[in-house]
Length: 196
Image (cartoon, rainbow, N blue to C red; front, side, top):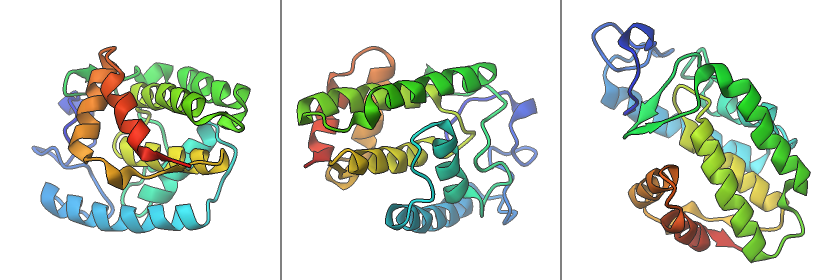
């Protein structure tokens, strides 16, 4: 998990950092294993037959619900607690609805990035990647939701994203740098991921 959060508001089993889950798994390693298997299968389902194509905040939430509904009661619901990770403070919980609507309204204003050159598409994708990462609207599962959403958005715009061609840890480090205003590593990563 890795998030920093007030223990009194954590949604974890007492004395642990393990999120309360529908399987009542109280070991982080067991929860991680079940979560990885379920979420991977659910992501493939979504990619094969998306349940939504509005590319707005409701769409983003629908992806999270689909990916995590078998694990958590709060799947698809925006977090109500403030979280940070590896020194990055994410959008305050009380600001999530307003900021989230603004992020996705911009995507709509840009016609969902359709008809853009690869270079322009990469610029827009970089900005959206950074904005959705700053948003971090869910208690857990933000990166996986983000990747499924961005892949669907790219496909709609005539591109394909191949996250398998970059190292996940390097992508996370690039995302951390981008949160600090240094976006060249993330830009380089996205350049490898975007396929025509």
